[in-house]
Every structure is written in structure tokens, then in C-alpha cells.
Image (cartoon, rainbow, N blue to C red; front, side, top):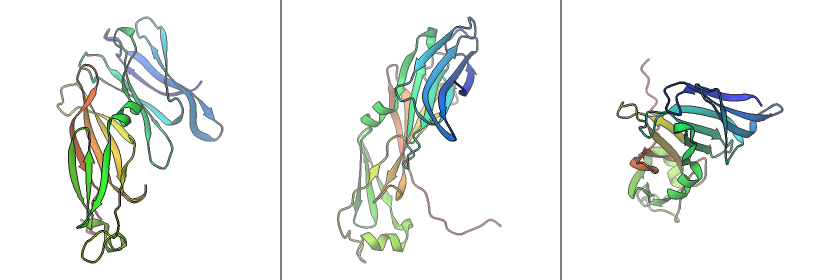
Length: 234
């Protein structure tokens, strides 16, 4: 099997660099891979351990190494693109401290644990509500423009009919060291959609911290994209 990505880092905690890599079966004339598998070659002994992935097919499989638990060893973040129109990803984080594989993060469990509701309201706004953590955000829709607003609102800003949006499953997962202390957090992104999937309203952004047993959202934001004002620095 070809090597799809590889990184060097101390993942078992013995202070010797190990080789962490992914293999998979490629399809003819396609960037799609099947049977994606994680391998770790111990830098001290040369022994290779193999860790199967539950979701083992997709596009652009990558590895990133960072310490999320604070134990001094790098943990292994694996991200695979689904290739669907929603931009979903499959993602896992493994610890390999003392040569013992341990799953720290599973994208399916994350998606199940984070529920949202997206409701259009009078006054050209959307109420975006998160269950975990319990938070509510108001998105101003006026940047969408008159053509968009006139389809769903009356001239006095009343909804013509009830509209609910949605939040896509996990679409991005990135290591971030906010405190610059060597212990990393995960930034999880989920796309907020309006009347249809291409109608993007923004993203829920959850900062995930390790508490000894699981990742939990310590902070949350909603990120929206502004409209083009047409200004230029030229």
C-alpha cells in the first residue's frame, strides 16, 4: 500500500522520534482511498504497530501531531475528507503513550453530542441555538441583500412562512495552542446553513479541551462571513 501521509514525533513518551504514517488503497484515476490504516514505527525498537480506523475511506487523509493531554507525548490527529457537497470530515485523535493506543476523539460521537437549532425570525434575523454548551446567537441577515430577503420576508420585515435552517456535521478540526504552553486545544467547525445547503450563514466554532477523560467545549463562537463592500486599498 502507498504511504498517504507521514509525520515524525514522539508519540509513546520515550523522547525518541517515532514515524507515524497512513496507508491506503488508491482508485484508478481518482483521489479516493480505501482501507486507510494508521501505522506507528517505534523509533527505538523499529517495531511497527497497526491501528485500524472505523471509517477508513475518503479523500485527502492527513496526520497532525500535537499534545492535547499534557502528558508530554504527541497525540495523533487524523482527518479524512468525505468528498460530499457538505464538506464533512471524518476525524479521530489517538494517544499512543507507552505504546498503548487509545482513542481520544471520534467524529461520530462529537456529532451526536452537539445538537443545534436554526430558526429564522421576524426582523431579518436568525436565532442559532446550541445545546452543548447552552448558548444562543442572533445572526443579522441584512448583509444577504434585498433579493434574498424579499423572497422570505414581507416589506415590513415579517416572515412569509416559518423557516428552519440546519447545522452540518463536523467540517473542520484543527490543533490550536491558544495559551502557547505546548498543550494544544482542538478547534471544531460546523457550517450553519439556511434554506438549503448552499445557503451558508456562518459556522459554529467550538474550542475543545481535554479534561482527563474526554474533550469538552470550553468556549464557543459563531463566525459569519461579511458581504463585499467593494472597497480597495489600491
